[in-house]
View (cartoon, rainbow, N blue to C red):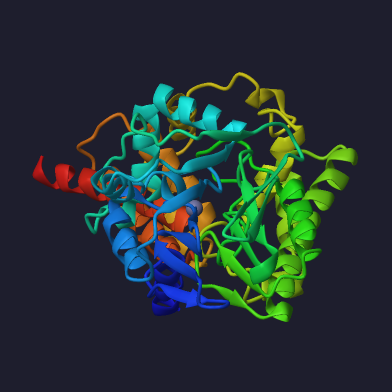
Length: 428
Ligand SMILES: [Zn+2]
């Protein structure tokens, strides 16, 4: 299971060879996210410039396929792993004195770039946590959001559409929301090829990232249904391998639509029943249909069902989650824990935490251990030391069981912080 998880993530992150497809004039070049190149008599159309740190690799891969100049670039959306890896291509354009290509994006992508500039330090901080395990391997250095290849053709509004012809090939671009609000996808009828960006990525759709802004499960379902109508034979996902064959493409799109409709509609139904988030979330865990849960297509490599429930809820609800006014203006968690420690000793909390852990109730054990960790008066305390050790052990176990890359990194990041604290305590 651990090896399987690592291999799924490697493929998701583009560690597989570039590949030509269709009539041999199309090429998928992975670089964390995927880049897709269409070669025509008049030059190239490139769908996405993936991660800047891997841009040289993507460039070399593309240039092993074709030496023609780029005429059009399409940003599937403005994330770092789809619109920032243009450096070596731009150098080549300058060196060979080629004309600059047209760069196509949705207007929300321009807003995204502005947001990245405003929140550059915050995004660097949260991306370090989201991609912690990659950073550990030295590939996660900070990307400057101030260096951007700005779009020249901008699609505006919902349901926007743009098409152009290059070298007698027709390219159709559609806007839909899903993982983000600035998504564009491409349909090339002659090649029967769809490029979906992150509207389709290997595994469960990435809606409901714990750190990031609202995502759109219902819109993602509608995008899948629009793509199904094209009856494509090839589907280039934002991450992962090329999907080949009419049936497989149809299945890949349909099951994602089904999953997103399910999450959205079941959450909405429960909101209408007057339920609060906690109840909705736990009910949703119980009713996750086996067909979706066991689907190989929807394995939780990066995004996951649990996050998608949050995304559906947040579409229609604010931050007041429990319906209990105690939680409306809560006290500090440290102060609450201190009061609990007045009722019972920290040793008894530790004992109870261990009992829960031994009974396999890891999540409950974490809540109990947090009473000691949050409520401690003294850093130099054997009970605190033991509580931290057990919490670290539980988090590492949870991380190993966790398939979602994002969830796994969040858990592991905190485990690493606890390990540091344990080391400091040992030294005092
Ligand atoms: Zn991506």
